[in-house]
Length: 193
Length: 193
DNA sequence: TAAAAACGTTGATCCGGATCAACAAATTAA
DNA sequence: TTAATTTGTTGATCCGGATCAACGTTTTTA
Image (cartoon, rainbow over all chains, first blue to last red; front, side):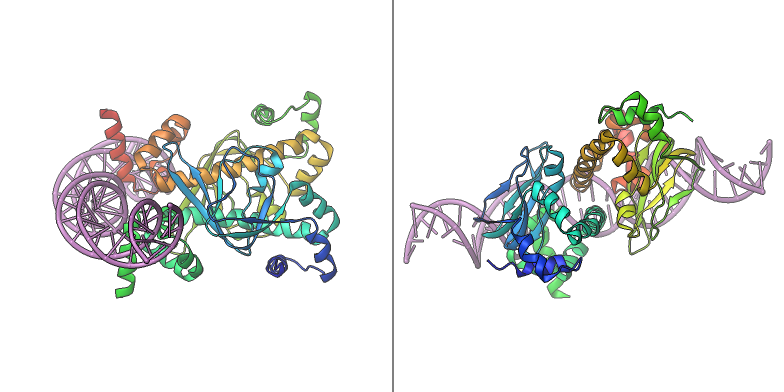
């Protein structure tokens, strides 16, 4: 199991001494998911926060009418967790599902705390990452509300081209808030021009 | 300056001993805002996180085209802050502006930490409030993207009727992602039925 | 308190995306 | 490897909200 991508992720935020990384890894447990598996469901309190070594997942909620609404996609090299829910012990209301076979490193909230006690850089990592993520998520949510779908789709092509290759198009459509037919038409429009 | 609303807010999350509250209040500083004042702007690191004793504010961002996009409205009895930005010392990218004359209790990040050391209930308050807020915000952002504006407007009438009375309608329109004319038409439709 | 600015309404027209339907292509499973 | 299921495309029609314009009302400010 190649944990290099995890080290690179951490180092994109803070300095991580080579010596620490091996120790730190002991706090996480390797897990695998089959395509379609749910890592957790709404109503549960997740046991692990998952870092994705390989694969792709989607987070979605069920609205009052029972329709799935995709909140975001997570690819390898990122966390996909509802860590807030783990910390507060309040059930989450999101579903986390593997869209491909996945290799995961899972960490419990207890080990998060342990890690922060032992490794000062891990604390700094949180301090830097959390508010940034939160802000970016809100901003993205705002774009989904205001920008026309063609702009959003072009943005995805530029910022996350891999996503468009690996994920069924109707998931993209759902995420962007349009029908899959509309994505089809956007694509032909983009090719023409 | 009536701080009762603040005590009630805290007590809606955790038990606060009467004796503690007076002490705790010393960690906050009373501030006032005139209508139109900005409490902070994008690019700044806010000095205080504001609890609103009286009044109403809006949080908005400026998109690449320079258009204002309202993220949310905050009325009295709530915090309106970008506390993540204060903690991480990274500049925020949101504007916080008073839509009415406001009475505020401001707290610095240093005093937040001090408060958490001194008052265990304040720690529990954070633990309970933060993830809940985060989740609710995301869910609301998702509704703005998926629900038709008439549904959203009716929801506002039920959940935040005071908002519709005190805020200019074009702000509501911006928040819901439609034009002010559309709100006009929704209102007449709702009256008819 | 008068003038200016901000705010809200109504009508006409236009357009983008939804919807429905039929079919094609690609995956998955038996 | 064939059948079944999932996924994607294309066309026709419809509808909700954008846009533009004109006007009325309310709030600000001098």
